Each structure stands twice: as structure tokens, then as C-alpha cells.
Length: 89
Image (cartoon, rainbow, N blue to C red; front, side, top):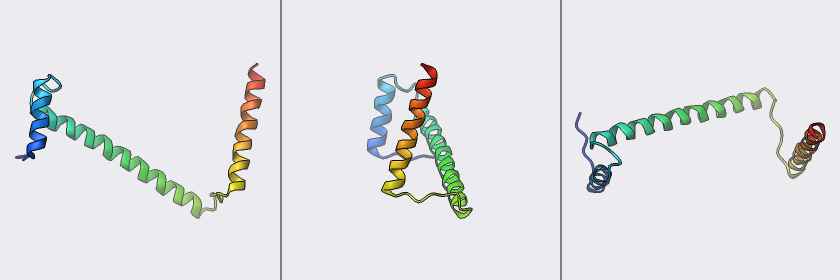
């Protein structure tokens, strides 16, 4: 496989090798692929979460988000925090 870099990309790789960031120019491709794989895993996780959320909503497990429901949620979180703090202290 042959990979053709832009001039800017070649300069970036040359600088990375010159400064010791990379041992060889080929290491740039290896690192780029590792980062791409990580990004793809994160994307797949996000898409699975979105799908799970959509399924939950379809089952009726969702809640309407309104200013009132957000206030109620914040109040509930504060109440539970105070209860935990009181139980611990």
C-alpha cells in the first residue's frame, strides 16, 4: 500500500521524527491508525447508547424534559446528597 501525504503532513511527520516524538516516519501511520481505531470504538459506543436510548423511549421509559422536571431532578439530587452526607457524618 502506498500512502501519499500532503506537504503539510510530510512536514509534520518530519518534525516529529526530528524532535524525537517519533522514531521513524512509518510510526506516524501506526499512531494515526491507533487513534482512528479508538475513535471508531468511541463512535460505536455512542451509537449503541443512542440506539439503547431510542429503544427505551419506544418502551415508554423516557421522561419529558421541562424546566419543572429539571428543577425536580436537581432537587432530588441535592436531597440524596444531603442524605448521604448526613449518613456519613
